[in-house]
Image (cartoon, rainbow, N blue to C red; front, side):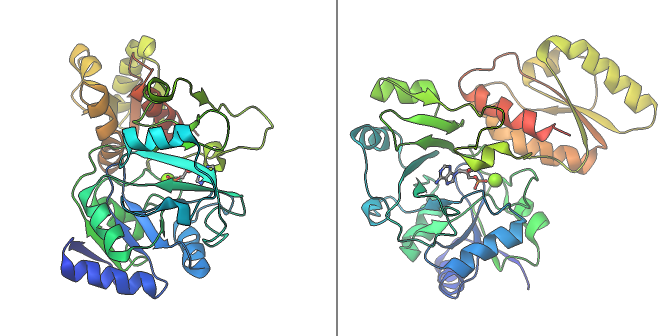
Length: 330
Ligand code: AMP
Ligand code: MG
């Protein structure tokens, strides 16, 4: 199969529609990362998404719809707090998990009785979803466990020959995956942290829980238990307090002939004396936006990435830390 990167226009949308209606897959941009989309009603197409990615078959997919789509087609109940949150944050990087109506393929939610729904704000994603007017099941458009893609070229490097079309919407501005929020209980519960933080949610609806996977417990959001987001090179992670140690290692490894880079935020980059830096920038949103991009730059340039965690770890940085820890896991 030949993989083509195309600008988002009438021609590529028409072609994408044809591919999706024939049971194929199309990669498309969102404001978080690129997604690998298939028709959520088509079980074979959805199963193919798992196959293409090498994704474990107990890790459910998020269904994407355009902003005027009536989610009551897909979900059986929307609590009042979820309506307020939708008003405050959608379209945007917030995925909401509801009780499912069971109309999409059971492969989407891996047999769970819930469904995760997302309305992305990215203009290209909206155009694609509106053109199809179908729920599109889409995980991130990378090989499972690899760093999520934030450019069309990243998708191409993972999925060349496996997807027909990659719709090119430039570099994703958000940079980390959506917040996943369980909306099936009395109060919303964050299952995966992201750009819409627990505090932002609590401000709108008064209360918001956070799910922490306990040892031996079955994961409520199955994706949480996997190693993820990892670059194809060696990695190490040091805390902010251990920055000096990280720099020592950097010099040691480079002296031994292992091409080593330090990945850190702008504040740390300015305070250390090293040449090979993958600088994530300064504000929380800048750091989130650059994280996967710089991990991909790192694996392209380096044999070893030594990451230094940012000092701040709450809010958006909680989402960044969650990814950084999983990226640097053995
Ligand atoms: P990805 O497609 O890689 O962004 O991962 C999707 C995330 O959403 C994973 O962490 C999944 O476990 C989670 N997810 C998808 N559907 C559900 C669901 N029905 N209930 C709970 N979590 C879900
Ligand atoms: Mg993913």
